Length: 156
Image (cartoon, rainbow, N blue to C red):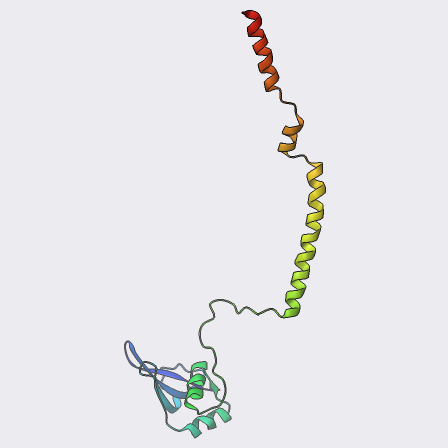
């Protein structure tokens, strides 16, 4: 299968590319390409397509475009279509929920919260908390103090 891809040419830290039609099984640097279709310089933002009709012929014969070459050809007006996102996907694409899904989620949350509220009240009554236990027990400390005061008065 033929692929239309970029072949890097140029010096270190100064990349420029050839747009070539090559066999998909050969590497881009092998120089075993079928045709040189153009040049692209990403630093200087220049692109030249040698023969746009030849590019269209390769595509008509079944040649596959890499995403970057597709975007270059769309920008140059050789082919019609939308550009493709070529940035790496570091995070998964999050699908925005529809109104129906949001309504169903809100109902589920409401249903989940309703039983919890009704079960909390009886549980609070059945298991007394430390504050309630402290309120129910009589305070013995003042009574002991009174007894101690009486003993000291009797002793004097």
